[in-house]
Image 1: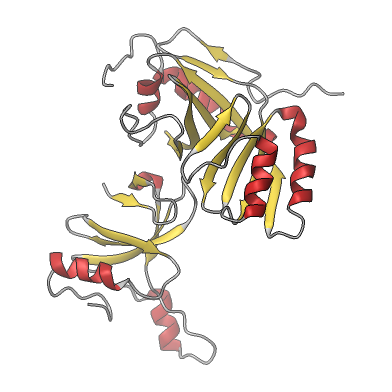
Image 2: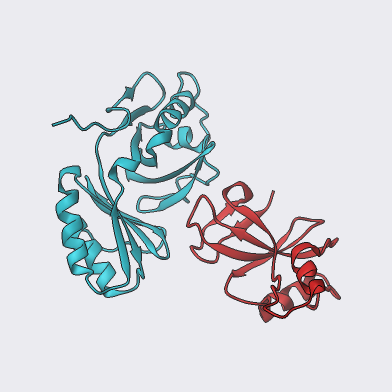
Length: 109
Length: 189
């Protein structure tokens, strides 16, 4: 059971009040991009053991989308942050580094 | 003229550990916009006649009130008969502002769950900490009640007011009826 805090309304609730929206920070390449880039956007996903970044929606509450960082092994939630960003905030990455030294996830570490 | 009734026409169940009652017609206006802007705030407070609530809070007196629904949404409560007038008034004062207001009175059903065991009866159905130290009067929470979305607050001590979708009114009533069935006191709080 995940306990998530919505960064939009500040409510802390358990996971059934939210809805998972898949992997975070996917990049959709624009016009002129290659078939490989499109394939990557559509199909290529991380499947980490440990630190993972996801999109979530506070579906039974304020209805807003946000991002969450959690561990796929311990289900610990490291933190949540706004949806309007292309990368996890620095302070959150530092928090994770303290708990999980040497973690990497795609280009982030 | 047709006779306007609420979803369950004030159906009541009083034989359990708490009383479940559909309160009948309640005027509700959804107001979306920047809740920090003066225009939106005053449009809501002028109609409701109560102060603007803080995030995740509600100010409600009888049938008038303002519920904080999300960072860009308020639910303005007023008596059912006054909705059309209030909506017109609201739209006039919001003229030119980036905001949207709409009458949702007939899209919802409102219940009162009252009695000394109301708190523990509701706690059986929602994934929310309802202990008296945490969930206090003035707090407003949107969550789910078993399988349907619900929003609720402590309207009076020992009385929860619960808003659900109208199409789910019968489900919500049946659900509350089971949660308050005789002999089902938990005694946790």
